[in-house]
Length: 102
Image (cartoon, rainbow, N blue to C red; front, side, top):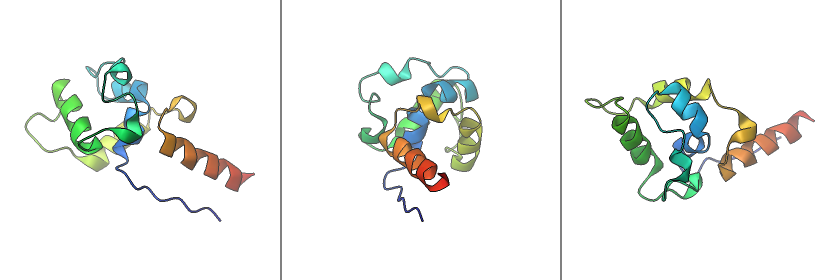
C-alpha cells in the first residue's frame, strides 16, 4: 500500500518540468526554472497556482479568464517526463509508485 498526500498545490509539479510547461504552452520560457523565486518548485512563495497563472498570462494564455486547472493539468501532463522533474514532492510520489510496482 502507498500513502502520499499532496500538501501544496500540484502546480509545483508543473514548475518542476518547465520543458513540459513550455511545450504545452508556447511562449512560456524554457528557462523559467532559472528565475529567482521559481528555482525550487515546492517552495514558491505566494502560491504556485498564482505563479502559474501569472506565467501563463505573461506568455499570452488565459489573459481574460481564470486559470482552468483541469485543462492546464491535462495539457501539461501530456508532456511531462518524470525523470527530469525537479519537484521534490513529485519525485517522492514517483519513488513511492515505483516501490509499489516492484
